[in-house]
Image: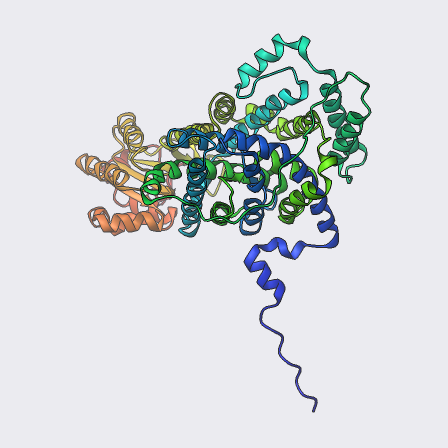
Length: 596
C-alpha cells in the first residue's frame, strides 16, 4: 500500500496575507499590478504640488507635506478597508490644524512643528481606538443623500480651486467659492493664456484618450502633453511650473512635547479626529458606491489611526482620505490598494531621479486634470432620480451640497447627517395604521386595506381590524395614541380591537404605555384588545413590563383565522343576533341562511 500523502497545510501564505491585509490580496495579478503602478505614478504626480501647498496651509515647511504623502498613504492603504481611497494631507485638515495650533505657538517654529507631530499621534490613537472598539457603525448614519450632496459639493470645490492655477489670473490664496467666482469674473483680462492652454491641453487630451483609448493611462498622457507644450511655448509666454522640489524622504522622529502640552491638546485632537474620520469615511463610501466594493468602517478607522500614529513618528502631520487623490486614483484604473502604495513609493523616486523634468510640469496642467476629476464625481443621473422619486432626500442632498461650498467639509457632513436623521425620525414618528377588511370577490376572504379597496365588505359593528406598520417608540407614541383615539371616535360602538402586529418592528417603554392605555380604554367600554403575531422582542418587553399578564396570553394569536374565531365568541351575542352585516365566516356558521 502506498503511503498516504502529507496533509495540506491548514493555511497558505495567501490565506495569511488575505486575513492580514484584506481580500484584495487574492485579486492581485500582473495586469492589476501594471494598472496600480500606472495609477500610482499619476497619484504621485498629483500630490507633488498639493503636498507642498497643504503644508503651507498648515503652517509647516513644504517638505512635511511631502513626508505626509508617503508614510500615512502607505500604512492606510495596507491597514484600511477601501481599495481606492488614498490618504495624505488635505486642505481641510491643514486649515483645521493651523487654526487650532496657531494660538499655541508661532507657525513654522520648532515648537509648532513638535505640536503638529504630537497631535497627529494623538489623533491616530483616538481613531485606532474607535476601530478597535468597533464603533464604525456610527458611519452608517451618513445617508446616501448626504453623501451625494457632499461628493457633488466637493467636486465643485475641486473645480473652483483648480481655477486659480488654470487661469493664473493673480487670484490670491484662501478665497472661498464666492470669492473665487467674483475674482475670476472681475479679472478676466488678467488670464494667463499659456496657463489656460496648458490646462485645456491636459484636460482635452485626457478626455479624448479616455473616449477612444479607455485602457490607456489617459490622465498621465494628458499631463505629459501639457508639459511638452509648456517647453515649446513661444518667447514671452510665461507658465508657472512646479520648480525645484525639496527632498521628500521622511525622517523618523520622536515628537518632543511636555505633558502639559499633551493634556492641553486632547480636546483639539478629539475634534480633529472627528473631522478626519468624517472625511475619510465619506470618501470611502463614495468610492465604494462607484466601484461596487464593500467597506468595513471599523477597519477603515483602524487603518486611518495607524497611518497617523506611524506618520506622527515619521515627521508627518495629520492625514486622512483625500478626495482629489482618491477619485483620480479610481479614474486612472487603480485595481487594489497597491496603487496607493505605488504612489507613496513613486514620490521619493520621482523627486530623486526626475527632479529637473518634474520641475517643468505646469501647475495649470494639474488643475486641468482636477477639473476632469470634478466632472466625473458629479452623479447627474442620481440627482435626476432623487428629484423625481424623493423630494425630501433631494432637499437634503441639495442642502449638503450648499453647506459643502459655504461651510467647512466636516460641518457639511455633520449637517447632512443631521438632516437625514431628522427626516428619518419624522418618517418613523408616523407609522402607518390601516383599517383592514375583506375582499368581497375573494372566496378565501383575504384581508385588504379598506381605504384602498372599493370592493371591501362592510365592517363588523363590534370589532375593528387594524394593521400596525412600523415601530412605536417615544417619537411615534403621540401619533399612535392620537390615531387610536380617532379610531375610537369614528367607531364608537366597536369596542373590540384586533391589532395585526407582525409589522410592528420595535417597541420601547413609551410604546408599551400606548397599548396599556388602549387596553384600559377598551375594557372600560366593555370591549377588549387583541394582537396577532407580535414579534418576539415585543412579546419579551410586554412580559418584562407585566403588560402580557394584564392583557392575558389568550389575547395573543399566532393565526388570523384562529384569532377571529376566538374573538367572535367574545362578542355581544345580542348585537350579533340583530346584526345584518355578518362579515365573518363564523357569523354564517351561526346563521347558515344568512347571506354574506
